[in-house]
Image (cartoon, rainbow, N blue to C red; front, side):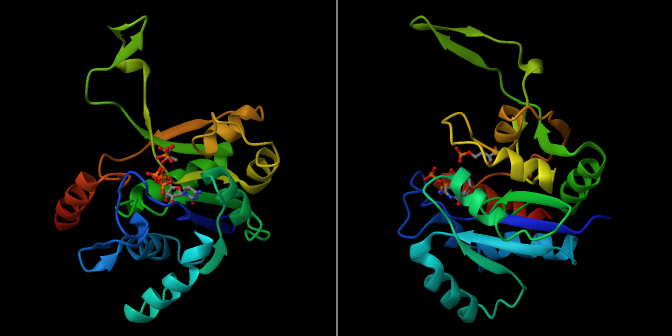
Length: 223
Ligand SMILES: Nc1ccn([C@@H]2O[C@H](COP(=O)(O)OP(=O)(O)OP(=O)(O)O)[C@@H](O)[C@H]2O)c(=O)n1
Ligand SMILES: C[C@](O)(CO)[C@H](O)COP(=O)(O)O
């Protein structure tokens, strides 16, 4: 396997969660969310270099949390930016000479070993791989003051880790930011890259609003 760098982006403010601290620091089953996430990768990719991107104002807070929870899983810390795009770009500066880079949301603490290994294996072959799941609800497009049903089989819900050959991701992240860059795949695609899909997991939720905390607590019990 190529050497791999894991960039865990946790530089956001968690505005939709509305908590007193950014959601990545909230405690889930006795441990801050971000520590669950880092552990999942350390357990699965023991030799990977792990870079954790944090809000500049919370780096000291994180170091205190690590002491408080006696969290010793190895990781490097770097300062994030105003957007996820900027945070990933800064994380990439720390990826060194790894052949592959996996970018994962710090707020997806339930990511499983199978999804991580599948994305990494497929990225070695295809260069740019993202995990997805099929929507389980009906979908409607809002248009012209009304809405129309769309064919849900034509859509997939996108997750992380998104894994790339490092040179593909580095080149893509030299582009100027666009509002359409919601994930790493959108950045690579805008640079002319082709994105391959692999199977994600319905367990791999992104903690975004308070209800996700309740869901994640429940899911942790069944793992
Ligand atoms: N400037 C930013 C914004 C987001 N992220 C990270 O990208 C991931 C996915 O973003 P999201 O769920 O939108 O997190 P927030 O931006 O923190 O949430 P919100 O949009 O509700 O403010 C999170 O792990 C978040 O910390 C980041 O590293 N740097
Ligand atoms: C990267 C991501 O988690 C893939 O689903 C998602 O695009 C992040 O979106 P958000 O707007 O930052 O919540």
